[in-house]
Length: 338
Length: 92
View 1 (cartoon, rainbow over the protein chains, first blue to last red):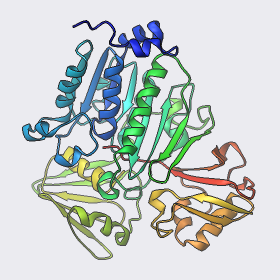
View 2 (cartoon, chains in turn green, purple):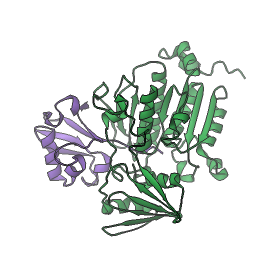
View 3 (cartoon, each protein chain N blue to C red):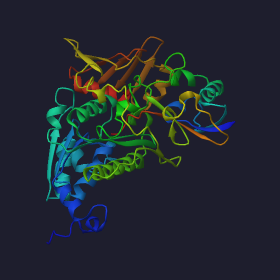
View 4 (cartoon, chains in turn orange, brown):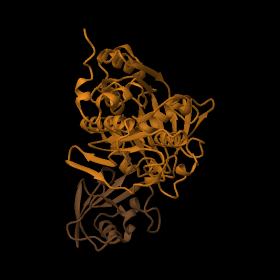
């Protein structure tokens, strides 16, 4: 079968054209996190003909992922394939003319520079803010643009960050919110159209930034209430942004969630990135659909699967049932939120 | 002045689920005060002690960042739309 007209419909589009298509084929994009957002953006970028895609994710596929993670199917769940590997297989089947590399890894300050080596652009498909601030640091340090995207419930946000030309994530949001304030997909739920819309916009922004086209700015949308906004943020980097001035506090591990494996206890302690003032009265109803919850004014105990999370009002959490810090951080991001 | 305030999901526990509310005020600081009077707890979530806004929240008047206007002293007019936008974390 002749493959030569694969991109004909986007080559006809004046914004891309033949030169743009060739440029995409020479580009390398790293997608960090391959869940609801990452499956959508990676699919769009593979179909658009980005020459090399690296997909990084630490998780396996579960049935409750299939509601919104469009790249995966029941067979992937049955075979217990890691998301990064399943994504590599499916994307290669969609487009065999590009190179797709799946990498199973928990992205952190120690490995993010290696994992993003060679990237012309990074796309955010994450579920937590701490790693997004890490991407932000790497982006500024290496002068590589990245596309922030996030979605929960029925709403989401998206913005391209181009070092030196646009504000970065820390210019707009200098600090992380305390744990437990934002709701997560596991506690607030998610309507699949929200991450799909955001992931699709991220892919469009990625293509545009690769081709040198001006990005859209900060987009916020809610697919349920019907609010769609392009917000005018100050278009220059902030004069007092540490990251824009070469202070990479997340990459240097000065900030962020700190985890400590509690020796001999099969438990990991997690300290939040910022002091939280958790309201257990608000938190308990959010957690109940996912597991057993019991609390008093000092402590909230939440049992889920084979784990127990003991949560204190300042956000400090002990995850019992594992010595693996990445599993504990995953549970923290999933249920408490950072 | 009466303005429309868009309430982001994390704060809707305070508004009984409402995603937009009407609030009076001459500027953003007054709008937040009045919002807090209607829905107690709002100021605690928006301010980080005193009257300094939390650094993970942006506020827009008719889609314009108040930081490029007059900050919390930005004047508002009848019918203006105020959006409160906390940083969103989810994505899986």
